[in-house]
Each structure stands twice: as structure tokens, then as C-alpha cells.
Amino acid sequence: VLPDTALDKEASFRSTSTYLVDKRIDMLPSLLSTDLCSLRCNEEHFAFSVIWEITKDFTIVNVEFYKSIINSKASLTYQQAQD
Image 1 (tube, rainbow, N blue to C red):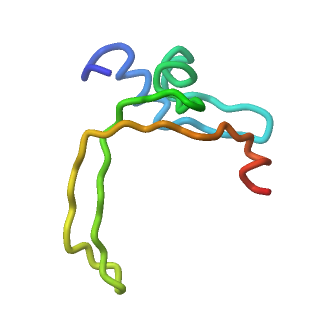
Image 2: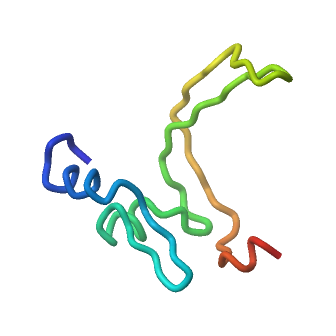
């Protein structure tokens, strides 16, 4: 999403995706949130990962950033994830 575009302004207005009991209100349009940017089972998606090294008292001692690929191995409902 490019800065200061209509899409960027709409996403900023919505602030975040909201999950309710019976529906969700996406921050981004459906094409992006449920298709292009969604982690669907057995599909590779480019990502940007952050690895933190943290001490036992939660002090961050090292941070590394990586370009990565995510390949989700399961597609679960919220109930399945809770069980």
C-alpha cells in the first residue's frame, strides 16, 4: 500500500481489522485481506520477519530483520485453533 493513496487513507481510517462474533471488518479491501495477503494453506507468501533475542527479564539484546517466505500448513477455524 503506497503512502497517501486512497487505499492508505481508508486503511488508516479503519485502523485495524476488527473481529466480531459473527463477522470481521477488514482494514484493507477484501481482495487484499482475504486473497493476496491472506495466509492460505499450502501457498507461499513473501513476508518480512523480525527475530528478537530477549533475556529472561525481557530485555531485548538483539534484533534481526529478514525477507522470508511463509507457507502455512493448516487452515483452521477459530474454534479449531482453540480446541
